[in-house]
Image (cartoon, rainbow, N blue to C red; front, side, top):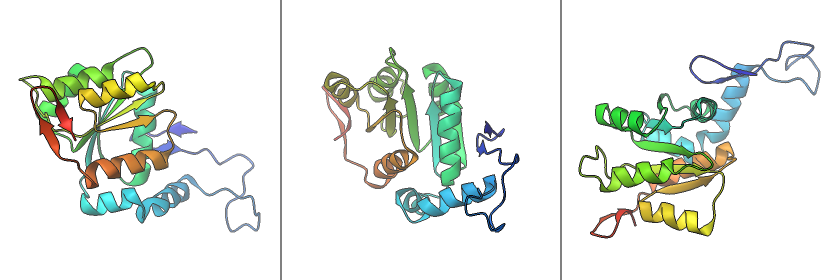
Length: 193
């Protein structure tokens, strides 16, 4: 398997693999058929509903790990999301948000970092923030109760535990965009209710 230039997963099914319709019950589908199956599975689910309501959905992926960005991009692409940008860190993310605001940001918080919390705090509280009300999903592999409270207090919209299943990402994206909570701005807190 490999990633194509647009970030989609390309399955290598060439060696000793029979194709569907050959009579072999274990035949694997081609990569195009696999992507169609993924989309058909989600077409009537939460991500399908989201893309029907917002066909031009734009997502900004923020990750310091290129492989993680490619993985998230490939999942989004398989869902049918085509307007995807990636940023390699908070400074690049803020620059991209200033140039063209996305509908949602998916921030990968690597182990031992606070990128998701710090970027969300900046977006929510800084006077120069380009998008204080931007919906933010933070993905994290280690989530203690204290981490969850800290993310919530920073104004994170949704938290997605890693490793993640594509269905979980679909639910979080749809919930964030289709069931938007009231946005609160006070002296003590800025973020979704």
